[in-house]
Every structure is written in C-alpha cells, then in structure tokens.
Length: 430
Ligand SMILES: Nc1ncnc2c1ncn2[C@@H]1O[C@H](COP(=O)(O)OP(=O)(O)OP(=O)(O)O)[C@@H](O)[C@H]1O
Image 1 (cartoon, rainbow, N blue to C red):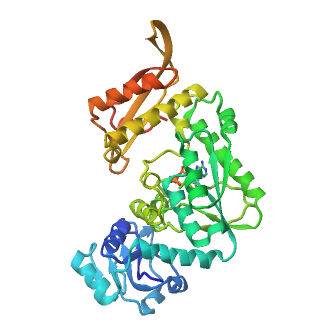
Image 2 (image 1 turned 90 degrees about the vertical axis):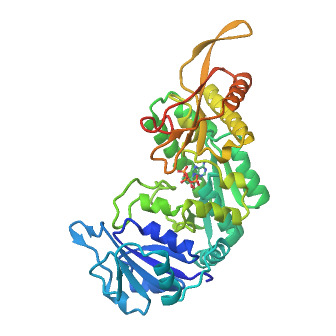
Image 3 (image 1 turned 60 degrees about the vertical axis):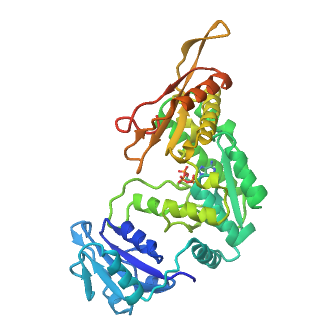
C-alpha cells in the first residue's frame, strides 16, 4: 500500500467530513469509521498511522452515550480525541484542531507521510480490488453518470475482462448519451459491455402515467427487472460493483447521524441474487471522484457532466410521457447544452436543462395557425442544491437558443425562461 492512513472514529461529531477533508488537504489519506470498529478490523486496515476519536453532539444514541472499545487504547497507535470528555487519550481537544496542531499530530506524532494523491489512491484500490475479487467476476450497472463510470474505469484497470458492465438504455437518456457509453467503454476501454436497448419497454410501461411519483417508481422498478434479467443470463458472478461515494453513506445515516435519505445505488435486487459489493469510491467526495476519473483517463465531459436525475428525461417530460414531447425535451436539451458550451456557460452554471409541459399553446408558422408545445429553459446556480438562484443568462445567448429551438425542434412554438429560485420552486419540475 502506498498511502498512510489516519482513521477518524465517529463518536457523534457532525464534523467528521470536515476533519477528513482537512487531513486530506494536508496530503494524508483519512477515512471515517464507526465508533464500534473492532480491534481486528482496525488492524486489518492498511497503513494506519494514527487515530482520532471524534466526539460531538450526536454521541448520545437512543439515550446512551457511545464509547470506543477499551482495547483500542492499548494497540499502540498515536491517538487524540476531540469533544469526547470520557476518552482515555493523553491529548484531548475541544473542537477541530487548527492546521498547526493537526500537522504536529500527523507528521510528528503519527509520522505519517504526505502521500495521498490520486495516483497512489488508484494504485492502492487496484491492489485491494484484486485481493477482494481474485479470479471471480464483477457485475456493474453502468449509467454513464460520473460515479458508475469512474467505478467502471477503476475496475477495468484492476480486473479487465472479469468486469461485466450492463448499460440500460431506458429511452430517457439525453441525446447521444448511450452512444457515448458504448464508444468510451466498449470501443476505447475495451470493456466487456452489455448494452440493452429497453426504450420501448419503458415507454410502454409509462404510457398514460402522469403522476411523478408513479413515473419514478415505474422507471426504478423496470430498471431493476431489466438488470436482473441480464444478471440471470450470466454465469459465475459473485460480486456487484457500485458507485457508492462518501456522501451516499452519510445521507443514508451513519451509526450516530440520523438517516437523511436512502441511498440510491442498485438496491432492490431479489434475495436469491446474492452478491458481495465492490465499492472502491466509497471513501471519496464528489470532487475527488472526478479527479480520480480524470487520472483514469475518462473524457472530461463524462467526468464533469452536470447532475442528471436517475429517471432521466422522464421527469422533464412533464405529466404522462409521449414520444413527441420526449423527443422535444431531448432535442432542446441538446441545443441548450451546445449553446451554453459555446458561450462558456457550461463551466459557470451549475445545472441547466429544458422541460416540456403537457399542454399546448397557439402560434403561427408559415402563415398558418398551429397548436404546439412549449420548451421551458431552467438554468440555476447552487452550492449544495438546498437552495438555488436563477442564472442571469446573457440575453443574446437566450435569443440564439430560442431561435434554434423554434427552428429545429418539432412540435414546439414557444420558449420560456424559468425565473424561479429555490425555494419555493425545486430545481427539477417533478
Ligand atoms: N441506465 C442505466 N444503466 C445502467 N445502470 C444504471 C442506469 N441508471 C442507473 N444505473 C445504476 O444505478 C446507479 C444509481 O443511479 P442514479 O441515477 O441514482 O445515479 P448516481 O448515484 O448519481 O450514479 P451515476 O453518477 O453513476 O449515475 C448508478 O450508479 C448505476 O449503477
């Protein structure tokens, strides 16, 4: 293993990730583990140089304060504690230490080396994946999104043809998205990729369904069914790769923090399909996942693409999905992205997309009355997606996009710009 490791034990701090990031910013790899880690599990972690017991306001769980196992103190690792008055550490701090104190702990007490970087991370993960998987096969659902793409690239590097990727085109992909998955992974990285065109099947199931929750359920449920069918056709698969990243774990709740939302990787597979999970990114933050993707040679567009909802364009084709409106969303979205990129806005604006509502308005084309759909453009900026402000987009750029949509997208006679911040509006419409 190339990287030294500082272990943060979560004893109810709300600052675990802040601390982990500060340690990584000093060049030392740091992982967060639950307070009840066993001495054996700790010993099994590679290159542990020191331990930080990180207490805080959530230390009392169900009326009882959580403690670390006593044995940990005798294992010989340099240890400090933060906001944990019951700790038996010689150094007990209140609040996260400043940079100088942190440096002293890392480099003098723990004698850690500043050897955390993506190259070393990838080398280490490659080794760990090979150890875990041996000569067995790993199945991975590859959406083309950042997380599953980076996992795929990592697994291809580590185990090559032992990885089987399944990409499901549910018909709700953006323009050329599935094609680019095939191009990058099958043609360039020579992955073992199964491409399933299930568009018709999804669109048939969705026909006439207007309720957003129902639409999401159908898309999610159908995805699991298609993936399961493919998994059953394959033989001798023991592992399932997942693009779990650190925020997914925090959002699903740790042993001390309450659950925010269930995390949404390929869950819901039937009980008899038993896989062990391979999750090489589960300790990374999103920006680190991107850096890892770049280091692995994935195209910039794939690694830096904007967030895209799991149910795809389905939730931007409002109400009951029809093929003509879906096409209008796809084409207008492609024009918007192209023009934003030309104007350099792709690097500035956090998220931008188009939606097509399920009603028509009157217009004139070629001297005749038409009754057609409208395209709504949404472009927002946000730091944490909890609140969002509207991009004050350049008028000329908006005019150009409008002209192109009206000229190039069928069944559309009107373009609107959504001026609503979040709250009260959400980022997506459904
Ligand atoms: N069309 C698809 N084909 C194959 N796998 C998919 C598809 N859509 C989703 N998945 C799988 O489900 C996981 C969760 O999908 P979701 O859309 O919620 O994205 P995510 O967590 O942002 O991850 P990603 O960045 O990989 O898309 C993906 O990581 C991928 O493994």
